[in-house]
Image (cartoon, helix red, strand yellow):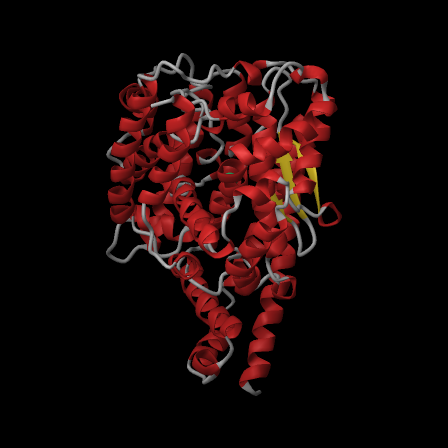
Length: 502
Ligand SMILES: [Zn+2]
């Protein structure tokens, strides 16, 4: 067999594995959009069965041998980038997955499906007791996984690497600390302002059927292809990909708080645009897969915040949106723009403004590191949570639902995932600067609703490369600079200073 034929055989194997993974994702999508309440346990069995089948395929010793052979062949060094990157990534994943026994993989799958179901109930009834045993089990399983994966580094980094390849918690802690100091100062400066935006325009009630129409409209206007996706409703917005031409976004509507759905939709559409921009002919292999969760999050933040909360965006959007509902009578674009940038320490991460958002992430980053290492017992987690909210944000959660039970992540086993949100904000700011350097002033384009040049730039610098580069390298190639907190701080200060008349 030639090296090319061996590569083809390996590629076919992983494309077929992707069919199973997409099937599992379909079951999870269904679970979070309309599963009958009593169907949960059976669904957990379905997903667990698939996870075992997927794991066996990923750790098939024959495929491991073929990958080793390819890694030693000229194809691994002299082949085209998508091929060399595929060989390197697939082999790394093979070695990692091979360290995990199937009983652990299946136990984690079952525990996290049941954990999410328990979390839904616990959150609805504000019951920490209902969720506590699940969280204990999930952190126990993920600790065992981290112990199997990590050689001498930190347990946390072994999990973080699955979401953000190459990231180290020690480095992130430093970057986040400098960001935290700047943001805490900025929040203080803003709170001293005598001209804060009131936020009143966003409090106007907008009927849900109007909001649905607006959500579809804005997703389509920024470039989301509905013939390759759809927009549905759920309790915790997300985006999932079920095939090369099937990327789905989900949002949630609150009649009395319009920005919730509007900005969730923009956010998830940003994720969707990235997925729709990946090379479809490489679906199931690294070149057809996103680079990292931090990079993914940079794409959602770009559309949600850097573009969607900008002045030119509202100059364009408001006259288009006003006729779609009579709720905004007497308002203007400038008022909506100012209110979209109101900064106020709050309890719930997904509703947080751009400045305090990263403080919410920092709290989770600290707590999950302590839970994983065992420094913080699960029983004490709510107290640790509440103390940090008081310390960083000056507020005390009145309930667990708005406290430690607010996020789905830990119930789904996603430990080491949260820092990728702040990474996304940092990357987003760097990408906006780079885009501006290369395309010239972006404001006139945004003010006319001409988003295509922006999307094309993202397609060319980020989307089309899939996971051919490590995330750090990809961002450096796009921005000509390594990870840096300063562009984000500068962006926030530059925008908020005139709004708050500092
Ligand atoms: Zn996101």
